[in-house]
Every structure is written in structure tokens, then in C-alpha cells.
Image (cartoon, rainbow, N blue to C red):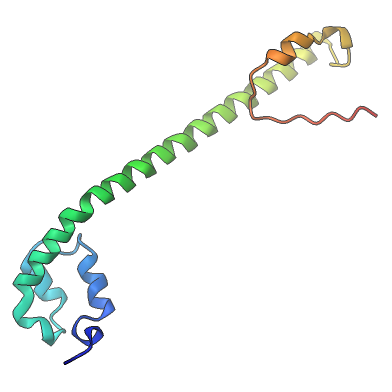
Length: 128
């Protein structure tokens, strides 16, 4: 009796599991033509592959959905960051246009600062 690695080597298993390559039994025959141990078993192996393809399809669809959601989240994060940066740039321009240096303590409304929604931008102020 031969060990499993001789009967069905890892390289053949990897080729079989690449479902995009295998659409028909003839594709399987061409792919595994070098494996003399499988010559009379292509039909049975093709049936198993079709079953595996059906079993793996929901997993593949779930992975695609997760990847799509992840891409959408990254896009949203980038958009929010860009909007926040634009908002900060606009407020800096308006301060410069009005002649305000931002040093006037009377212009800061503490209640407004406390109620402000976080933008993801951190500001460090050195009060020396």
C-alpha cells in the first residue's frame, strides 16, 4: 500500500482545490495527467470536487462580503478624515482673514468646546 502523499501529492491537491481551473472532467484529466494512480478515478474525483465546490461557495461569498464591508469602512474613514482636514484648514483660513491669531481667550466658548463631536484629530497645546 502506498502512502497518501504518493497517491495524491500536495501539488495535485492544490491544483484540484483551485476550482476556477476545473470546470469539466476533461479539465481534471488534463490537470492530473501525470498522476498514474488516478487514471481510472477521474469521474469519482470530479464528483467529489463538485461537492466541495458547493460546500466552499457560502464560505467564499462570506469572505467576499467581509472584504467589501472592510473596503467600504476604509473608504468612509478616509472621507471623514479628509472632511475633518478640510474643516480645520477652512477654520485656519477664516482666522487669518479676520486677523485673529487665535490667542484671544475671550473668543473661546468653553461650552462649545465641551459639546464638540470628536473628529479623530488630536491637537497638542504647549502652555509654557
